[in-house]
Length: 207
Ligand code: AP5
Ligand code: MG
Image (cartoon, rainbow, N blue to C red):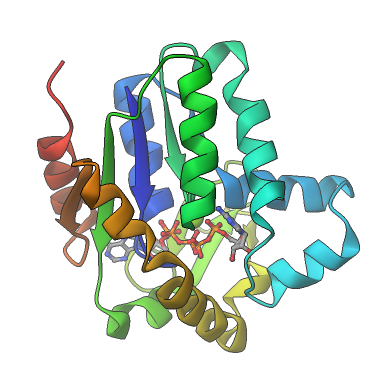
């Protein structure tokens, strides 16, 4: 199964992806996580680190290259879930080219729909455990006392606003692109994580 999870910053892509991938037994490919790992390892160009930390989107060629290389790895043979990629039509076209080469079409694009009014609050109070990657929220899903927490550089209020604006302007064209291909399924992402998960599972193609 090849799944794309689309949604604005803070819509719960990472939260849902972790549970879904565990239950489906497929790898979770988050371009944001890959880029943060490259930043930590010192292999991401300083100009790209600055762009990311301020809430901007990285060039299409950079992320398409990253995903193309990751998909070629053995654990992606039986499917994978893409979280936060593609975000633009050129990225979606890049993905189509990569998938056509391996003759494995995309099965479904799940859009997590969450009103803007909830997103900023979800993001500024997000924390993640450095060791496990587990995502928490200081109010809705508080971390245990022994968690080793980190606060993402782009979860500052100014960067959050920039990311929300970028999503609206850059990703708007992506949804009609997938709708036109009959692949888009919309899910209400505003409820509790378990309720969102049930809806996501319900729209996945039956195997
Ligand atoms: P990325 O890491 O993908 O960030 P994002 O898209 O902004 O999304 P987030 O990870 O912030 O949110 P999420 O939807 O995963 O929500 P989460 O589950 O954590 O990308 C970061 C940056 O990398 C980009 O800005 C860009 O610079 C670059 N980049 C990445 N991909 C790119 C691409 N394709 N092209 C170009 N550049 C790219 O949840 C958020 C919070 O809400 C958490 O605290 C969580 O506990 C809480 N929460 C989750 N679900 C619920 C719920 N149902 N109810 C209440 N609270 C909830
Ligand atoms: Mg995420």
